Structures are given as structure tokens and as C-alpha cells.
Length: 166
Image (cartoon, rainbow, N blue to C red; front, top):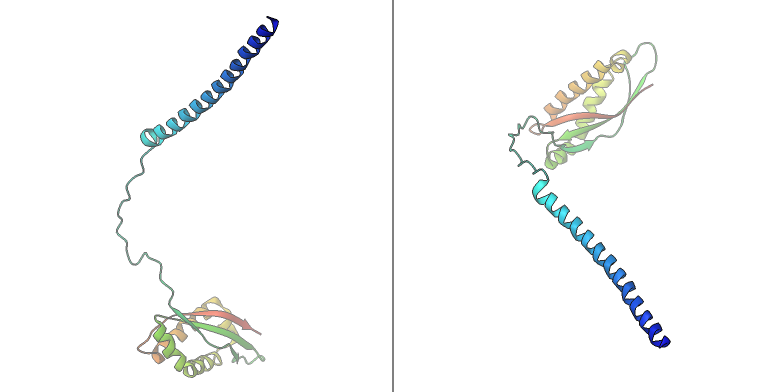
């Protein structure tokens, strides 16, 4: 009989352990389901709705300009017209053009453009070259002269990628 009670005692303890394991598994699954349900309810019913995109009229003047084709000329090293001494200017110029075809046509007139730059820069003094206003003036004058040579193509802008005075 003692053996039967021992067996019966062992039999009753195992279901209690299993029932605790099952209880924890069921509680864990229930917590997960409640969390998932809460998330679903929040996103579907309680979350603020995104505002529909309003169509805004775009002004072409407000849009950023696209960069055209860039042609870089060989560096220039010229003497400045400075009576006080020997001053040199080393400058590298890049031209912005509208199309690839315009860039190809400008490559053909590169000797004319180099001549324009050299003739203009050698007539300038050190004081004219070193001020910010002088550099803007050089850019504007070169742009005007380049556009006369490159007609019907248009040089949109001139960039100085190197500007050294010694």
C-alpha cells in the first residue's frame, strides 16, 4: 500500500507541475495577444491620420537651377600690368554651358577664348585683381566676351577654380 500511495503521490505532483507550465504559457500568449491587439487598435483607431498632401503651385523661379555642361580651360599664367614689379596671376577657369553640343562647339573655339582671357588679364593691375569687386568684374567681362564668341551658344556662368597672385 505504501507503494501505491507513493505512486499516487508521484502521479498527482506531475500534473501540478504541468498545469503551472501550461498556465505560464497561456498567460504569456494572452499578454502577447493583448499587446498585439492594443497596437492594432491604436494604429487603426486612435493614431492621428496623416494629412493629405496639398498641391502647391510651383514657381519655376523658385526651383534650383540645373547645372549644365562644364568645360574647364587649361590654367592661365600671365604677367599683370603692374609698374611696381613683376606680378603674376595664375587662374583656372571653368565654363558652364547649357548642352553637351554647346560644350563640343566651345572646345573648337578654345584658342579664341584663351586669347581673350590673356589679353584682358595682362591689362589689369594688381589692385584691380585683388579686390572682390575686381574679381566679379573680371567674371562679368569675360562672360560678356565669351558669349560674343560662342554665339549662338550661351555661356551660363564662369567659375574660377584657381586664382593665385604672386
